[in-house]
Image (cartoon, rainbow over all chains, first blue to last red; front, side, top):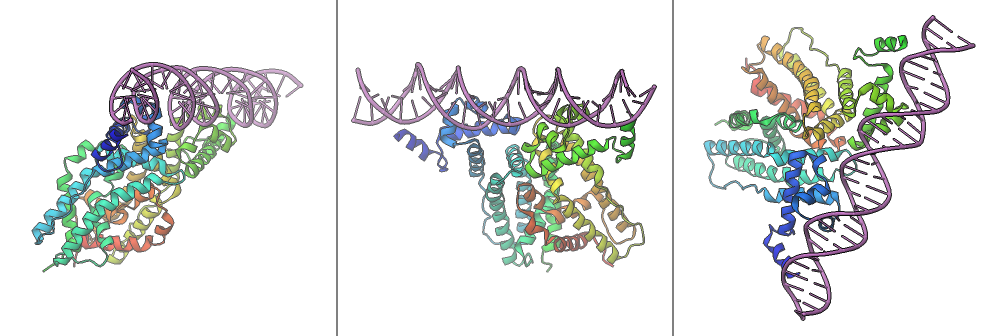
Length: 215
Length: 215
DNA sequence: CTCCATCAGTACCGTACGGTACGGTTCGCA
DNA sequence: TGCGAACCGTACCGTACGGTACTGATGGAG
């Protein structure tokens, strides 16, 4: 009992035992390697050297396991906040390019693609609970970083926009375009990844053309 | 035998009998209503009043059925080509707005979302054959319309761009942003659809700011 | 040392699905 | 009228999965 408590404290604060986190790690690995079809309770139990009974005790249900996987992965990705230092045009551009590159890197990541595929596949049936989780934990998170960055740019009179949401949408669209969908559909991302930085710069330049304040 | 031949001729030229097209129609309906989980061979047979044996005879396999569904749906969507008349700035903008609105309408359609979800769910396992089909039959198609439109704009000295693919990517991103993904994840599109036309106009204005030739 | 909780491993159950086989029916054709 | 192909409806088979129950081992608490 006490042992469990210690482990729970030692974990990432997600209310998960180290053991449970390790199980989720293996489950994510299975999902990445073989898709949802490979994510069976027996498979997870075998891969993680635990019993199915424990799986059901910890996560209650297969859906509970999926939710826990999303929550666990989201808890691992920490988006560093923008340094609130004084901004000039060059620094803003650098920050925007860094944001764009990070965005492309995150979206093209193995685990991100696998979880998005999982949630999308689950979205048709009633609930789309996983979709909401991904949306809330993922987009909200990265949207906040972008929002803060854009707001800082406006405060420094380097950006001009009325609707921050619209500006963020334009930035996102210019950066990502249809690449995310193409990767979700299985297009090999190895070719793409090389041109990420160039793509990020081009997109940021276009964004600055649209929303940058000319002095 | 002859009857089959007649029916085949009478169909949309996809090499499909009317009966088979009707079956695919029911299959699409099942997929839209209940997702991939609801798309069972027995379910399709029941919904289409045909026997499972016929399903396997016509489509060979469950994957064959899925491929046939994508091909059938793609054959139904015909993208009207741009009228090659003389373009002025207003006409170009109108055409671009029409394209953007159509794009949003297509992407938010029931069947499109369901098929994309299906292909994405299938993408992790070996092949991603469905993903390639969707990519080829869907995006190529709509990309050609956009490409022709952009090229016409350049010929009329209304647009300026070096890389047509890049310009198309910018247009697509500005129009769609992350809405497609959000709809795929299950976000209710009823709210969104109302603002499609406004969104299309805003996106086209931004695109023209980026690539429009100032006179 | 004893008790008790937890957990791994496995066996088990019900169900549902993909795929096949078979009897009965319709319909074009000779 | 009789033949044969296509087809519907259904029954059937093997398998695989989600979920449960049981057994034995481990390890900490009193």
